[in-house]
Length: 253
Ligand code: 9D3
Image 1 (cartoon, rainbow, N blue to C red):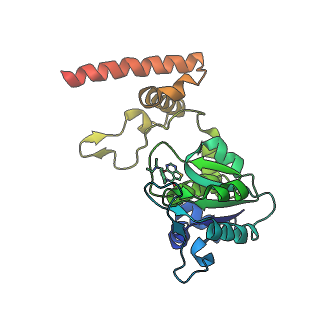
Image 2 (image 1 turned 90 degrees about the horizontal axis):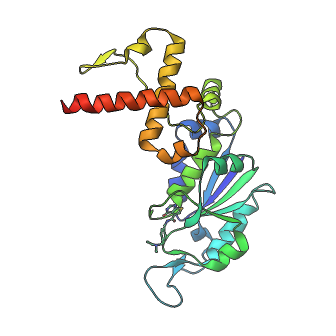
């Protein structure tokens, strides 16, 4: 996959993608990420990329000419069938399903906004879709572009190791993760749950599923509401809830 990011901060993107799973995917040639700036295409002496909004009001708007020129130059480096996506606070929410859809594209053209936004005519002619990463206000689209890139690239074949891909595939669908522990067995007086030390794999699997169900019930009831729990899962969750109530009681004693 090839990804082109149009941004006023191309160095920020280029640096950020060097780390971790994404950095390794680039080293191994599974993905190429390039970043370019509308400023390279600004033709006046001041290399102006922004201007005041028609109609007045606060803030500045990314000018159409340099943004359009940068997008078209980036587009020319991408394979056909690469969607152009504007990262925008008022876009459609990024989801795991959306990331999976993007992972099937040969390339992506991403526009990260700054200021109050981009001249609407750029969006009309150059952009296919608008994507937001959540309901909070960022200062610009760069971090959102990086989130989208990270979520997408880790789904490309051969990016995660076999073990991690298998774990991802088998992960209890739609539930939050269970708690994790490693050595030492006791840390600052806090012991690892006994069941994890015993080597009873059926008991461990049962404990983990119970924890995953319980955490989802506590933290993300919206996710739990979307699931059809099996009879066994309902029983595990009831157990968790009973233990949770007992835990509350013992803490207040
Ligand atoms: C406070 C300014 N807002 C006026 C009502 C509009 C606004 C303009 C520019 C809000 C945010 C931004 C900058 N944000 C992004 O470019 C952005 C973003 C976000 O803020 N939240 C979630 N996803 C994204 S994707 C791009």
